[in-house]
Image (cartoon, rainbow, N blue to C red):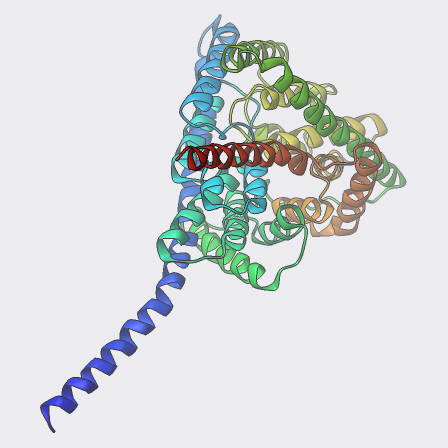
Length: 453
């Protein structure tokens, strides 16, 4: 065989191999990123649980230590708000509005201001700081921003150009791994994040959810978030509970989201002359009220509310006013400007509301708590399919499929009648508007410099 022929054959083979590598590299990077989101979500969950146990342990360790939150919580709020404003801007709040806003932006630089590895790190650290301080926040919303940030950064490294689809995939992977609810992750991405069906993007979502779910499953094992429930309507009063949880939970959720959107507008106007100073004052004030409510409730309203919600799902009635106290603590934590989500606290509020309804009407506490979660959660996020699927997967209560579905729909309809704009999408408009203003200012400045030359 002539040397020239052998060289040309080797050259063609190397081009095929290299072309094949270039074809597979983005896929391998994407798969690695999805697996990493699962690992990060599990690590985040364990650190968040440790932070909450540490706060509870410290504040219950001595005779007068139950008063410690009156100092610790306001200071923690101020520190968290300061770090969020100075070191990690756009890390405040849940993180889901940032991910939604990033999908509406057209420039990669604008998306990076909302989703980046730096922000993901800050989001994890400051959410844990909030839980160490007793804030009524959750880690699930922040996991969405972390997942979207990580997927966008990894995909940029792999040369993938589908930014909107990747944000969707990272968000879904975060929810799926955070709650161990793969179906809810997919439904959340379609119903809440995108509000449309995009076949190509949803292929990315499905792949990311599967891989992140496998990673989380390998580390944490198979489990239901709230254990396994088998509550089902057996009496006429249980159907009355269903109606009250749907209408009442939806109205309560609409009140929370409407007040949150209104308060956000008022706070931004009030803080305008001295934004950092005034936001720190607000954070300290909110922290003090959260601490006061927590002390009055015997420590029940601090943290995510997971233990209280699980107890209600298992049939243990919560205090009648727990849901109102938890709602107030969650609302103040949200508007304070500290990073932290509302998923888990919303489920706790819903479980508390359902428990109160079940106690007053005389129905099953477990069923009432599950229906209360469905009605209130659907009312807050105005995403009935997500509410139905996520609660069904978290409780494993297949005997109450129809009641959970019905209450989710009733809660959604009630909320839409009272509050026209969904909470997360309303909050995302703030980030979109800020990005557009910054982009226009930059373009104007660039145009003036060009004219000067």
